[in-house]
Amino acid sequence: MPGNFLLNRLALLSLFSLSLSAVPILEAQEMAADPPAIETVPPIQIVAATRTFRDVEKEQRLWWERVMVAPALARLEKRSDAPWAADARKLLADAPYIVFAEPWQDKPTELQPIARRVVDGGCDDPAILILAVFIDDKCDIDWKFAERATSAALKTLEADLGMPAVLSFFSHTLAAQANVRGLYQKKSLESLEKIPAIIIRMASDSSYLPNEEELFIRHLYLVNGTLNPIAGKILALAPQLPLPDWVQQTLIGCCEQTIARENEGADYEKHLDLVRTALAQAWKLNRSCPLAASRMISIGASNSADGGTKRT
Image (cartoon, rainbow, N blue to C red):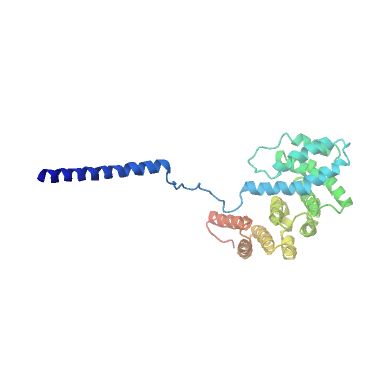
């Protein structure tokens, strides 16, 4: 009897051991048949806080295609026998991509001879002539070339008032710049005096669409130094422009900054306060546009470089 009891106990223990050893085997078989889903970490996506330079460059190209290139090509179709037509097409195909290139990028030396042949050949299309001046200016400073090209552009624009006002803006601004370089200050001022009225037209005609207001400001920035003598007049018209408030405030801030820089007297800090107020308001109204913020940063950096001292 005791022997049978011991045998029975051993049999039960063996059976229990076999059942335990079978559990991991069965679990392994189930895992092999249907492996559990493995949680994966989603890829990291870095989203820019605002648009990058490449985004702005793309917007610039689309604008140049709409306002400058496509209309000029349409006009060229009717003048395909002009001696400068082939060079003009080459310029329209390549120039807009580098007009707004960064200063550190290579100079467009391959396009410069084409730009000069277009002007020397008698081209009178304002869009093509403006591109020629921009390209030549990136390679060399030849005020006589720029003066000839802008004179031809303005002659055509005076005969055809239906063209976008931005063509007149660039033509007069580049002409003023050329005459300053040639020490013809009076002729330069004559061109500049016409620009405030042109800016009003630019803000209301086909020069800029409702989603292109930032380009309106950027194009004023592009020739900001040339416009310094009329900053006060542009400041006066800014609130009247049929553009969003953030555009007006950005323009006001830029003009006040120019006036502050040229004012070494007691009103310097007063103008600088007006700059900060206008740019802060512009930033609050449209935070997707970095222009107001970048100007405010430049003011802070300038003050830091000066040791935070006030001019008196």
